[in-house]
Image 1 (spheres, helix red, strand yellow):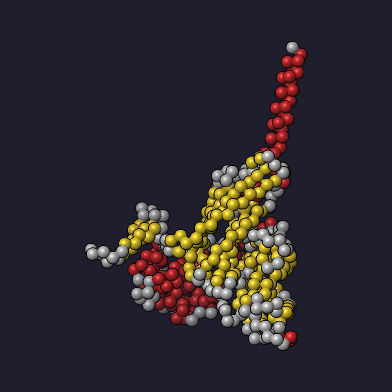
Image 2: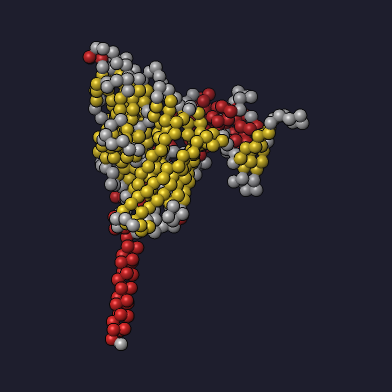
Length: 441
């Protein structure tokens, strides 16, 4: 009887210890719902070969957004990222990237830890749609995003620059891995966010078509960095750096302390000058600074301040435009303008039109807290698409198809019907996201 009682006690004690250990491990993990599962992504363009463009796609996910399961060596998370390149309704490229993260103990998972990845797509000049998906294979959670992508070709006969890649870490390395570039390991910063935890702004770019004659005094080029705020004001300019040309191309890697900068949206401007040919080229990249301590300002005051900065930025845009350009922009926006707005615009002088256009787009901005008017940017991209694709008239947005594109956006599905004895060739555009559905031909 005593032995049986002792056995029961030992089993009970073992259950207590097992539950305690399990609870301890569970407390270390951060469980999230599928709605909370998300990731960040970014992309940049670089030259590859003589006249080809390479799109680098960066993605990252918080470690505590993933589900770790036990295996023979500890704990493992397994997630997949899929990138797709679309043009019109055609899938041009699709590439999956599998990712595995192993840890000895769930206690190693800390807030702020991120896992990074990078993928590549060779691209030709044109307009595309990028679709990117991520799935946690353990939890089954998934998320998808998409972005419109415009690809330009790089110059072959004059000085040119790649995009600026913002990084969370850059170090010299000869280790050939997926983050290796020109003698460096470059870990991307896919949300371009700095501040708490990342006080150093780090970036990588490539310089193309440097002229390199034989004279020693002319084998140099200069690099200048400027940081510009969302008002367009230069808040810091760094001294010019003069460097020897390593060849026809060069890599620029640098970092700067931004610990004294307040939270906000900024632009890094990189300017390069060939001291032999006198050619100059510059490129800008947007980044963000955020610190919790800067949130002392009330939400309403911060929102008002952000709106003022955005309005000031767009005022400068229209001040640099001719009256003809402003008229053209408003004419292309007539499909969404009210009758009253059309009548008012006709009676305005140049200054009045500048102020009117700022207010016109401001009223339609669904996210006034951001540093851009996404509604305006999206609408004008559709105008540009209509002008390129529907050329039966001088302005493609004036055509029937252009009007439908501007009112409803890119169709969810396109059906094409070839020429037949009964019919001329035609297409049908289908919109499923509009209530009730819309079909046009």
